Image 1 (cartoon, one colour):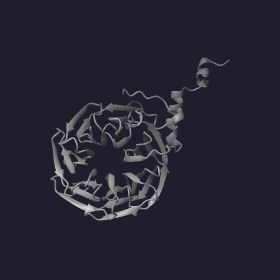
Image 2 (spheres, one colour):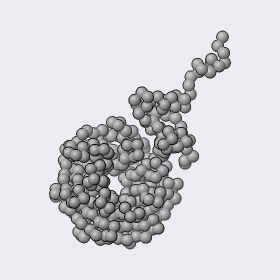
Image 3 (cartoon, helix red, strand yellow):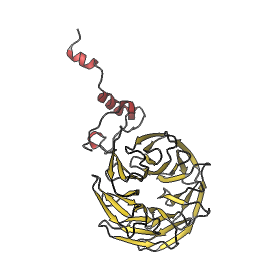
Image 4 (cartoon, helix red, strand yellow):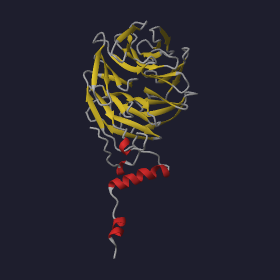
Amino acid sequence: MISRSDRALLRKPSRIETGLRAALLAPLLGLGPVLLAQTVTEFTVSGTPRGIAAGPDGNLWFADEAGRIGRITTQGELTEFPVSGSQTRPYFIAAGPDGAMWFTEATGNSVGRITMAGTITEFAVPTASSRPTAIASGPDGALWFTELDAGKIGRVTTAGVFAEYPVPTPGSEPGESIVTGPDGALWFNEEDANQVGRITTDGVVTEYALEAGATPAGVASGPPDAIWVTEEDANAISRLDAASGHEIGDVLVPTAGARPTLIVRDADGDFWFTERQGNKIGRVHGNAITEIAVPTPFASPRGIAIGPDGNVWFTENAAGKVGRVNVAAPSCGTGRGHVRAVPSSASLPCTTGRT
């Protein structure tokens, strides 16, 4: 006769136990971490949010095309600061080396600076109608930005002194992404030329062609020696060797016609990207892509950033919202504040107190 204790050992394991065992065994089997099924939280903001970046104050800051700069806490509390005119169209935003946030004004033809207290200063770009777009802090202590209509890369010091460098290929439209690479140069997309550009802090530009029909949109740095690129028309995430500019390979996005747009690297070395047509957030881990649906239909997720809370934050350009993929979950994580992976078929609930 089987005792009660023996029956307890022979019973079918619960879903939670199965998931926990899978999570513990995965690293031992060389499967690596896989994310638990994440939830998405959305916060309504006014206007048309586009770029988003983490600020030095522990909040997220975003550029609103309706003529505002927004600040949202990790709890979702919103503050908005109007720019000089509603038609300036703030596009993208980045943390500067001076403790302020810097942003572009696409139709205002300016680069703006906003302090943590909300004081805004604007600097006019020397080339008229240049359409400043993406912006990033460079390794030289200046801000670097793309001039989509002028076909240039701009540099501005924190004192507002400009320099501009023409991109060699005419009509290449350096656009929505610029980032400091692992080699200390700035890398940017050239959407219409189907190229990725590289510019040194001395202003020397080199261009690298992608496979035909790729249409690069987002660029991210992948230390120690790679550049990751979203390819909208190829519907893939590509990797370039930073030393040679040659493509190493790419990973196809599961959702057809997703149009992967902007991309960012998290602290664990994974890459997250927006799918403005697929209406999802994608994650690249190794050579595998997983996707998370945005709750609001046709939201057109655009900008993306890793927040100071370890979560993935993004803008919903067509829905007037800021979204948060709830990744960080210390109560059931690994002690590093990041949820670890189990296969989707064995995913288990994780109570974090989030709503």
